[in-house]
Length: 257
Ligand SMILES: [Mn+2]
Image (cartoon, rainbow, N blue to C red; front, top):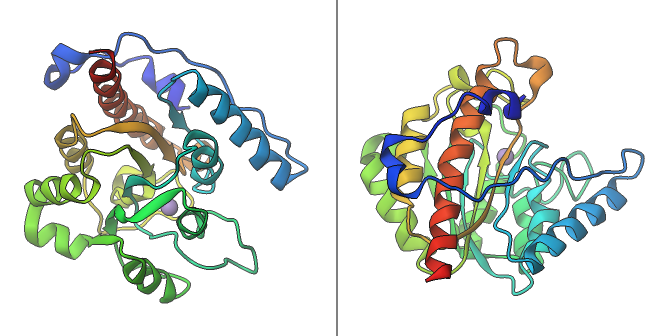
């Protein structure tokens, strides 16, 4: 669905000078539907191969579990920074008895040394019927910077950009974009739509504000086409994908210098 919507994209004025030119659709990462753990290993292996070839991946689709195997494959050195757009922190210890799920991803990633919690900023967190109170407390305790929508609304986009750049610094940084970080009006086609979030415009401005940060990979998760009746969620994901490609293109360009 995101591929289909991306066909209408051209280059965007804000990025005229760095429109990504060397982009390849590598197709779908294979998974093994009958075996969850094996699927994670296959995904990890796939991104390890890409990483060794110097590819800066933008990953589309899947639920919010997939950054874990991506990060495992991508980041042999570990301890990267991360900018996460999300209504939820996804730092629970378990979800319905399971340790690796869409709600526990970044706790596992910290435990495995894949991301450095002190270089993680989560943007768009908000109420809604969360399952526990423990996730945010854990994230805070671990040293992550949490930007709730209340804080975002009070301080604005320029502040969020400055804060994100301060938190991640110049070292390698991954971006994980859970589409439900957007206000539910922009993403009806997702598993847990949450009202009261930031707008598509906010997301585009914040992403553009990250240009020149050392972005080494990105994903857009939780787009669910069967419940996206108008296709608007996939359209938004495609546009966010373009923004992310531009950030990756800038990283590639600075590496080539
Ligand atoms: Mn999430």
